[in-house]
Length: 306
Image 1 (cartoon, rainbow, N blue to C red):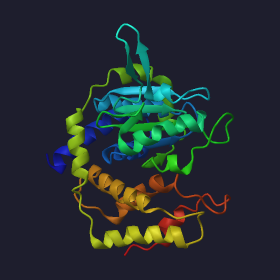
Image 2 (tube, rainbow, N blue to C red; image 1 turned 180 degrees about the horizontal axis):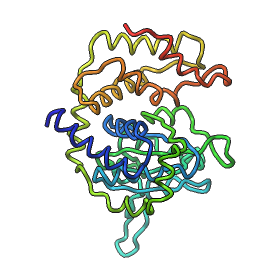
Image 3 (cartoon, rainbow, N blue to C red; image 1 turned 135 degrees about the vertical axis):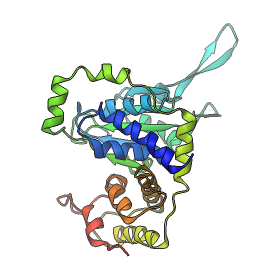
Image 4 (cartoon, helix red, strand yellow; image 1 turned 30 degrees about the vertical axis):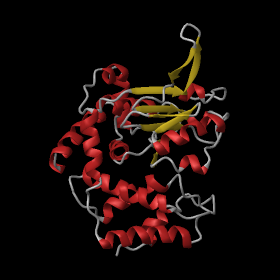
């Protein structure tokens, strides 16, 4: 299947999602881009702005198995991964898989769980597998995590460590809807009914084909120069506690390819990099000056396009 055919299906997915998540077109595009790039998505925002609905919407439209975990401070790793229980009748242990054994895992309020439980996701997010009781079990494909977290200043949160944050390809914030979208929400029927009535636009194989196609999006030498310049600036400018890692550079390039494909192109232009850069680096870069929240914007303003 070529780029044109993919774009037709992607537009159908986007338009359907836009009927559920109102007034958030750009954020929906970013979320869909993350899925195309086979990455995990972190959504940080206040409760009640549609984080869970967004995750459920894409799972429904992509025809994927979906599970949701409400993270709490008393949750154990076994509640996520599963557990082996001794079956007396069979005289053996039987593994009962946890909710992670689905295509889409919604880790709701992930930073309300303790670090021990948070770390249970590390192997799954990096290697698409889970090792328990000395046995490695492969997760279904495609597999990705959509995690939500409340602002760190809220009571009862455990900040995610850098190693965990780095497993997320992108991070977005939905924010409040504008006045027009909020009025539509107020007068419309319950969004859950509309969500349950959504018909899948893809199947697993079609999604896998699209994700594979992203690898074939081309990048010029000048585009790679631009990406390297952005990475170098993050390390040498002195604005950040530490610069972007090589893995972050690869993430930026791969997400840019997915964004190009979403925009009906088989090649990447600098505007693709600029469109996705904030979502790729906002959870990876920490300004030295905490009172300079616009420090990430400096990457776009100070680094010239070759």
